[in-house]
Image (cartoon, rainbow, N blue to C red; front, side, top):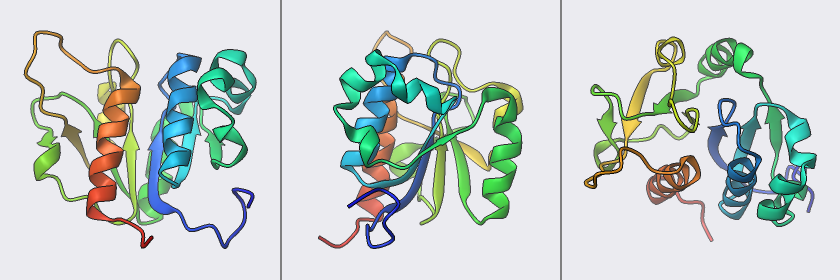
Length: 165
């Protein structure tokens, strides 16, 4: 069934990767979003889904996963729109005030905002989100790869709001 088919049940989770720049990471996010039947994956530009590096990792997931484009300069307005539509919007961030993922209760309609690969979520974006979520980490490296972090957050959302099989 095509992604636009209304009969396709999807989880009410949107992953916003507007700030992610690496096509390989974006392709991996597309594959993960499709495997878990997420509502939408938001890319910085839909044209990235045509790049070889994206498609190599996406493994054809772009054919079935609903994709949306939102450039980084439009992200704060996009977040405000999602909040007005009733979505809870949360940044995946290591900021001090972030709620630990194991303690976080996802609203059914949720958006997870991913940060840039090296610098994370900018303060102006954090300000328009409802809050931030942090994945507990224990090693010397300061962060996970953005795709890995997103996959962990997605899994926790699914644990809380699984579709019937």
